[in-house]
Image (cartoon, rainbow, N blue to C red; front, side, top):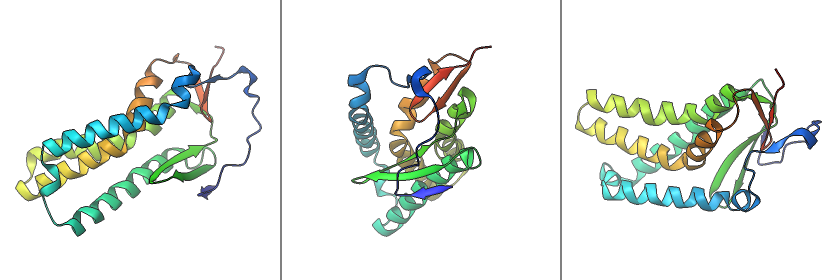
Length: 177
């Protein structure tokens, strides 16, 4: 079930054997500070590359909205039948929560698939299209890289977890083999 702008119902999991995904409490509390800093750095980099001038403001806003919606839909597709999903927000930032228990591979796929589809594929496609479409694809991939700030950080952190880990609600557990 998808919950729009509501918290997920409490899941019946014994979290006494689970470890917080980000162990350091200060880093966990200030995680979004790292995300905002990365997003600001990416925005400044894109501005220096002059990717914002390819079209009119209306076209750019429409493309931005479409990239955001497609980004979130790709996340939802990965966990749709695995558990409940909640789209929540704070200010202008949105994020997805799920109560699904995901393997390391599936969680990594959940985190990185929107980045691959909306950044890596347009980057490759840029080599094969004309100038206007190339500018539009560069705009799309830059917007998605900025939107993916938290995903980029989380994908790096996932790589450091043990291979037999399971992830749920901001915690991970190492399965006994």
